[in-house]
Image 1 (cartoon, rainbow, N blue to C red):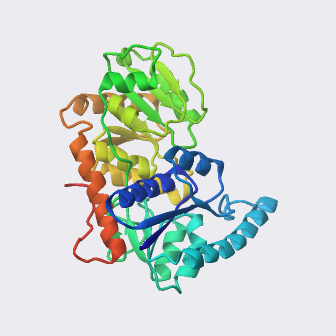
Image 2 (image 1 turned 90 degrees about the horizontal axis):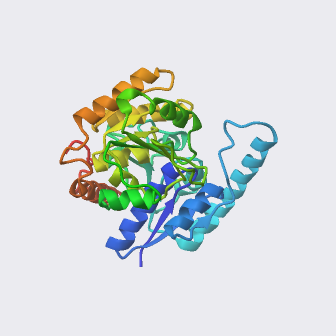
Length: 365
């Protein structure tokens, strides 16, 4: 039986696409899959929630961007991971290898550039990371989550899209009570605020303040954070712990306010969800800003930076609700199903080396 090795880790932005693709492969092919990840607590939490028992490398982060003893420890972990990666490849002898970028891919890149297995690196972001640029220089195949993958020249990568978690649209009342069982489902607009897998206190503070404005009376804001606790609801603001299942969130939302993570934005596009995108500008190589602009080219959204005023954020929320919320195609499950299937099929065909599928991605269809 053929074996597919998946390598992903670091944050949810790398892990969730890998998990989504693994589930699709397990359900639709006879391949055996194995997922390799790192040793961060966040990776443990996400994979435990997904019910996946991975193979782990003893590495928790990139040695770049840190200094002192911390950097030395990470360089030591990188060297150890090279040995671990070699052992994994020798043990599994995979027929195909799919890397999901980030520092975790590097130990495998070094070994696989001399191996016979077909290897593809999937870049989720609209701006390629260091591992992706290294893979390109080594002559490996690159699958891109967006039509443009800066700064790689067009023709050096294949656009397939970003795998997303399987969509399941719930009735609004059921979705609300799944998230907020202590309060009745409101009649007014509902805004879901997702600050990413690491949370965003500054973004939550701005939305909490904005919710008091007269124009937003009757609106409800669900602030999803990484605090792991549920606070008592206010009249308009509800604090939720980090949610691994996004189906209730997107089923209940009229609008989303999100960071510029590629996985999150791809799920917004799949669900046809109007979203205010707030890029985290400290992200490496400003990739969240590049993601946000790629999303705006094909999805329903508006761009807002934290350096901008509350008035401008209010204006964007009102515009998106007026223009898009409540329309029949909002959160259309058929569209989301098509998005999920087309991305996974295009990526699978590219991984297999098939030229019968152009793999031109799901957006804009």
